[in-house]
Length: 93
Image (cartoon, rainbow, N blue to C red; front, side):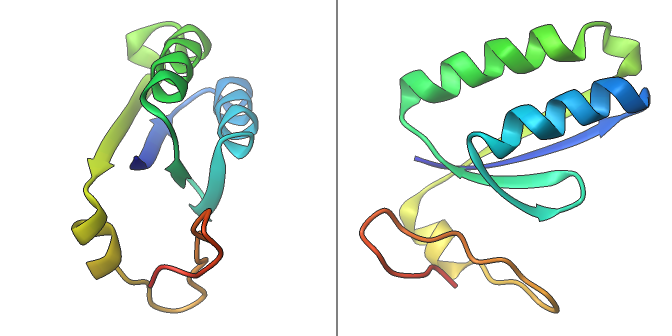
């Protein structure tokens, strides 16, 4: 399943930890936005780790958007867009 994860986190240390964690699961497409291709179990584990890393709710927020295949294929980027490669070996635009 394709997911887009964005975050707005105030403390620098927490924000850095979240970015480092997300780099293990997907591609950074903006400073605080990652695109990931995950199985449901992987997403569940990632969400738990993100909750633990974020800690206090007042430190910021994290949004997770699940995208269907059609929506993913219809998405596009402008400027220096990063393309997440399909596991099958072709690019999604």
